[in-house]
Length: 263
Image 1 (tube, rainbow, N blue to C red):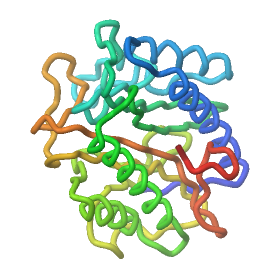
Image 2: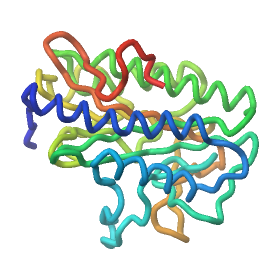
Image 3: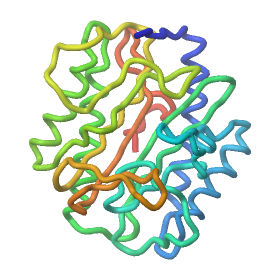
Image 4: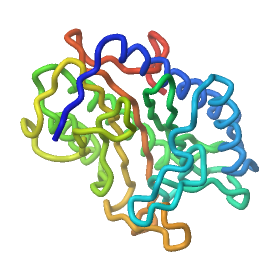
């Protein structure tokens, strides 16, 4: 395992990369409504990324199994879909749906990666609670991204919060280091005992990304597109992600506006 520490100048570039994503997700939140397709969301994101002088990180990304390229600019995962949903003209959003939008960019040679799950119109109280708990679990994980802590302290904080509210944490997919490559060491699971794995050092940048199911944690991979992962029991799933720099002054959330609550 090779941990890559970033300089303050590199982290500043990653701040800019993640700010582009922040703006994309803010625009999606403003415009998302019943009747849109997931391809509409994809086009919106692609236009904004290009206008910002960045490149979509996910488009063409090779499948870990057969190497086939991911066809979309963003991953759009609907209701019981957990991650890696493929944009489609055929997938029309309805009132009460929840939609996870995961966006990655490359800017000046560095990656940004962030996700949020949005309500489509009015959603049920259970779905609202799922979104709230997942968002809160991300904040709990981020709070552990401090010099001297261990990687597993992040996942432990996420898991404790999620399971304390009666939901389950997905285990097949994890967060990761990020920088000049989209996926770097270390892997950052959303579960586990505290005080284990790599010690956090200033200059590490982590993509922390809880994926939380309303039902059980088990995952089923779509046979139709080979990308989309959904809950095995058909329960809904939420996904929130942010890139966080470990600094001597504490965790620095990359991309967000000063004073924002992180979506």
